[in-house]
Amino acid sequence: NVPKVGCEKGEQPSWDERQGRIEGALKWLRSELGLLRAQDKVLLSQLKRCQDTIEVIKKQRSEEMEDGEEEEEGHWEDWEIAEFDRRCKEGEIIDDLPSSCNGKTLDISPNVAEVTS
View: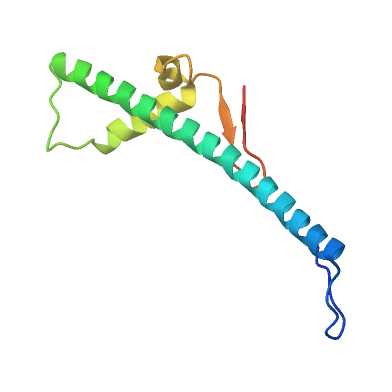
């Protein structure tokens, strides 16, 4: 929060008070900018992980299609989605991701932006 320097009944703030307010506001802005940059890094990391996961899924689907499995009506059946969810929970899908994505969790709670191993 930006510190407030008040003036009573039309009193003009001194130069030091004004300079203090400006410096306080700049400090707060720098802090907020730092938090936003950290959140940007987390979001970029999440996007990269999503892209990698999509590529893995595309590769798996194309391999399955080559093995003779035919897709009906261009969409996944409920059992396919359930199987994918099961494999994710058991870690099978994560094992197929590039090593840059494995073993990392992202904490995007407000005021905290970090990647943990």
